Image (cartoon, rainbow, N blue to C red; front, side):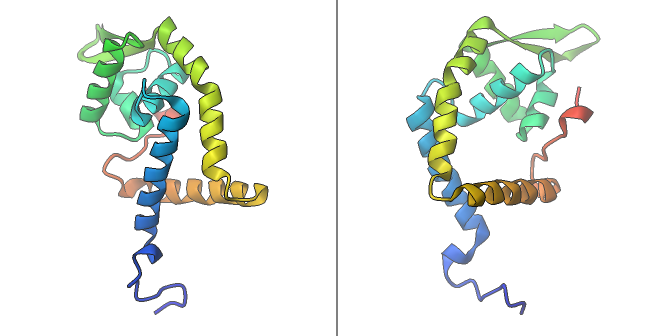
Length: 160
């Protein structure tokens, strides 16, 4: 057995369990700092849409790392809230081109301070150098394990 492994009797030695707990903490802080107008997934979809106007909803879901059926549901909710518009793509009537509305852009702008506070609060237990190292390692962990996901994240440059 490699020296970095134990018998994993203690649940808090399992990286997946710690990642799940970190996600729970992150979501809790998200609502504290960002309010309840958007869920974390809605925020991620809207933020990605703002960066890629006109993207279709299948590609938007892929660049956000969620499955297409969840993506469609999230887009419908955002449309109901008046934060995005979906239009049929004439060359493919099954796809919808998405654009963020002025209200959606305004909301994202209003949420920037909350997003900054969220990041600061979540990373506060770490020193500055630890924060940089943690973000680098977390990014590497996600990127290197991307294909293991049920909804692999599609790189932005290959989607459209």
